[in-house]
Image (cartoon, rainbow, N blue to C red; front, side, top):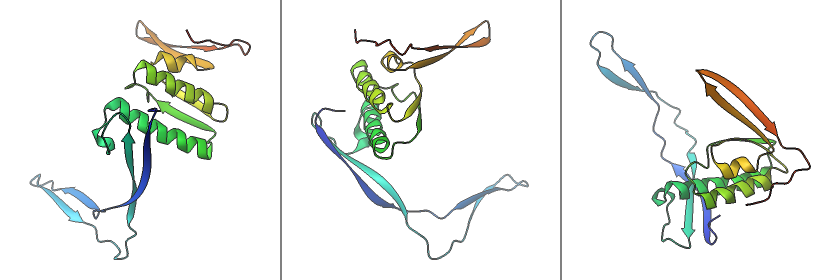
Length: 162
């Protein structure tokens, strides 16, 4: 998605805090915390750390990326998972909101490719993503009343890039 660069996933152990229960005293409205005692044989909590190396930037941690770059890294991971396990459907809610037009088109092309094996339900305002859809649904509001519209592309129509 970035042209050149590398990324890897690393399993890490997360420091797990004991569960805290919040209790509020009704008499004096003071807040107090009570710790729940847990079994001494706790299973360690595991997480995933994403390490990246972009060709254009000297950034190693995902937290140092822009919003659009974080979205691309997240989508690359998601699309990798989809390519591996091929779920029957995927719901995406405005995942392309932080992307510029060029990257939106890249994402739209990947979604079109993956949609041969997986059905996508996508909520978006992005024109590039809308153009790869076979069926469109829209919600319009007029005078405080919502109206749903839909459009299905005829199967013999092929949209070309402009």
